[in-house]
Amino acid sequence: MAADLQGRKVAILAADGVERVELEQPREALERAGAQTEVLSIHDGEIKARKNDLDEAGTFTVDGLVADASVGDYDALLLPGGTVNPDQLRVDKDAVSFVRDFVESGKPVAAICHGPWTLIEAGVATGRTLTSFPSIRTDLRNAGANVVDQEVVVDKNLITSRSPEDLPAFSEAIVSQLAGTTTKEEETS
Image (tube, rainbow, N blue to C red):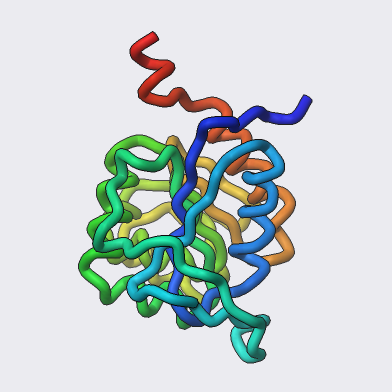
């Protein structure tokens, strides 16, 4: 039976250089399950997507600025990869603060490929079991994470995955974890 995510809202934090499939496939899985998604970025308008980091792959419309976003408005956070995208996010104080606050809230946070770079900058990787694209595993270890090589890893509220090849398992894990959490409305009922 498919998860019912009606009434759930997911922030997708991304910037120019986002790997298209790493935003698109999890977003489609969340929306098929009934969740609403919003793309947040460090600038308004559109963000440029890439394919394999090198080829232009269209754009995504930005729904809001991370500087104006509140963790309380969302039930989960998705951090897609691509190398340029998280490299821009990790030097933006509003993006880093949003990621830190989201992880500390206990709500699901999912990062794939190079997406965990922002987790490192937010100071939330220490002591956590994570996976990522091979080229940033040393960065994760240096930040105090326990790094494993698995298609998807769930450590409390953090969900991480290695690369586009792992997108089916990653998307399933995000939907499953979000379906297993409660909303503020459900907590007060």
